[in-house]
Image 1 (cartoon, chains in turn purple, blue):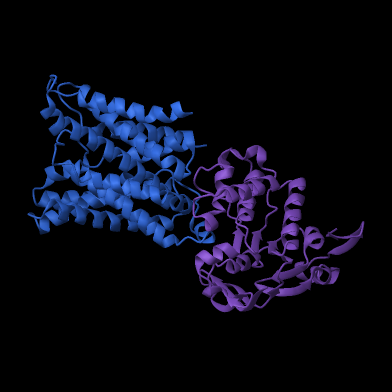
Image 2 (spheres, rainbow over the protein chains, first blue to last red):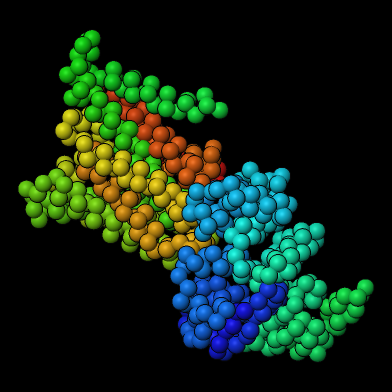
Length: 250
Length: 307
């Protein structure tokens, strides 16, 4: 379980998150939802220790995040960020292989290579594995970065808007992978914009607004007309189609 | 495949052979003295300086996360020059290694300051980084020239700032082996430099101590640059042209490409030096001048090739 206690974060002096206390269940898929600028990405980055909280604590299985040495943390927690720039001119396989760095420190074993290939296959990248990233489309690049995160094989996986740039088929593929990872016992936390997707795949939902937690609970409770209408300050209806909840704003 | 792998070393060997037999003094069979004292050291100096500067260029590009930088466009070479002028003023009789240490420290401080400066620039416009570096290097170079002018040291500044290999002789270039050693050290950390090129966040996500790898990279870049400036003078653009060519051909996974970068850098500097020896035979054109012209052309082409 990942728990935050009265977490506050400021970005260049301005408070962005205030008094965040949530409990994200282990081995479940948690969706972070909310309007633009609610602080979802900031919360995710802070959980990934890429941002330093101004106050408050983050506990992973009861252990203070600050007490985990960086190398050990890299084996426990991986994060997909929104910032797309990769930098060096690498092939897809190179990039995904760097996801194994915390395990192999650059000397890939046969098992590492197998893991890399599996991540490439799962993201449907086999046809592009030896292409350079700068020759790929935005969606293909996004999938390569998700594959890198998967190859890291950590117990906690943080994904910031993983569906960015993805077409419908690949968006579904990525959400199914996230679901499989959670079912395999990993704690998956995903920032999502599409509430229908959140309703279909998430076990647990944290709704954020203006840097605070507006609602938190099982997805059935949070993905409701009442909560969502209040969250987005606009009329939202939740319909049931084929046994699934669909969120509509018409 | 194996043939392709052997092609680059074979080309280097061929160049080295040409270099040994190219010069003003006609070589007679058995003239080993000339070869041993002048031609071989000169050839070795060109290879070492070229390989090391190309490697320094790649590392600088990873640390600055920018394709357009290298030691002569980030103030590193100029800072090294300023360091030698300063130490020469304070302690004119200091041993060469003391001057080299002073140059390294100055290059280190100068480059660290450059990195701190460009961190503040918006990442959207990558050209701001080399522009800032060129202006910054110009200021450091002007300071060095001013100090030197005041104390009648101008001709020394010229020697340091314009790479020239005709003065290389046995006993006068050996520090360059240290630059070669630093290039090899860089190879041991190749993966970490590639990851550093993906940025601080990715580095931390993969469990890397980012500030430490930046410090290590700066040390290698500053060391290589300072040694080169002190022994043969600054050779510009090797660190820019070579890494960009190799990146186009083979990517930037440094564990794979660093040896290619080193070999191409060695070959380029040696080829330019040979060219400098024959263009106006029997006079010589400094290798730094030739690379300056060639590098400027490639730099413009790179700017133009950018979408």
